[in-house]
Image (cartoon, rainbow, N blue to C red; front, side):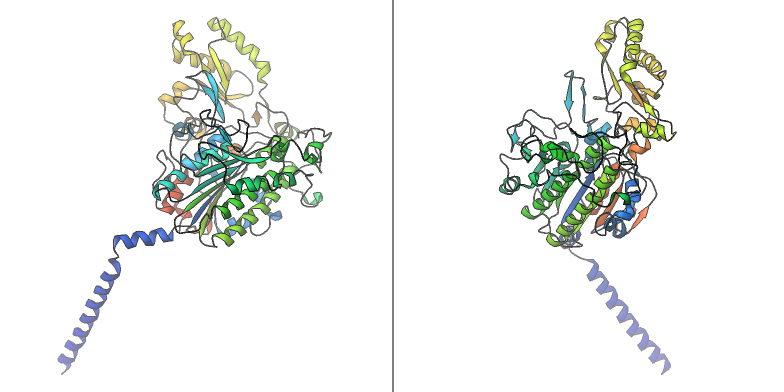
Length: 560
């Protein structure tokens, strides 16, 4: 009897096991087509890329107590914060910065080695987004003669368009043309930038369209630009801006007609409603009109309106104009970031309403950092200074004349690189490597110069860390120069007032990287990440191909 009972129990357990196994097999055998549909539905409806021009990482911590809920704080408290994020190349400037964010690689690969550079083939200076083969759309000026043709590789926005068979939209927006053209990639549906002058309009290029959409014309005719031609007053009581220096210092620039760089900024140019809309860019209102236009694009283009992922690339440029004019430690920079925080809150509210909370993904980073004004650092007894190239130029030319019989052996100096005339060197029967090294040795003797590297070193070595690693990632064999100089920390070439950028030093490379929204973990890391990691991270999240020149790595900790 006991034996029969045990056999019955075993039979029941066997049947249960077989049934469970079969059920598990049926659940696991989802047809490939259905799996693909499930994966597509888990992707966000919209990706929003935000680049803040000239934003140091420490602006997040420095101004934290003044930020409101819903902007920067929302991204950090609900998203993922990469606290040790850096550019891994130089020069750290706007054109290369935006390109590297969206291509997942460095100038050594994508070819945008500066905002402008000396072109060795034509013997002229070229602009990173300039293209005379296209005409302006929305203005009679030449401000729309732009395209991404100098960018050698694809962007994450390109790859998303290809992945969706061009059904996903890409719209790119910035005050600066290069801040829209380069993130938009080669396949953007549209890129728009702000033309100031006496027009104050959002414009584009015939590369993208024959004429502006009706909604853009309506926006331009709405009087928005004119509404921002107003005095720049502090958002809060100036006495609360304890995180910044004095309001009136000799380290800051001036608007035209100003006698002191103090609040409120209320000059005839700011108040005149009929001309000089360019001045809006140098106030926080340039960011506000960018946010206005981005929200309008979101609504009018129905971005994120279906399960096919769209991309909205937005760059806030006024932070750069203000930083250049007033400097890192100014109350103007602090006020600009507090106002930007409010603009971000407006954008998030629009995304929640139009796309739906939990249905979109946002990243925020910068195209470069910035140096404290060297004259301010000197006042604080911190080593700093200026190159004073105009004074050194005469000594350098005398050296060239004495050594080679001509100063024409140097054709150009730009982006801290010297370009040599290889034909003259060949005609003089000189060895190029030796000429590079001889000139480098001379330059190393100039006080503000900290290090010098030659093109031969960039070609023959593979650096893995430090300043030479950063320089090599920015060195493009076909486009870069023969000799690269690095100034001492705290030193710049110009200007004497306000901040600047471009160096491989840490104050220019350390920038924010925040992720928020669908597919993103909540947390942070202090492990080093690099700007070229952004595009691969997005590619993994979206399940699409990496940009075709990508050298960065996905940041695994960011993704759910």
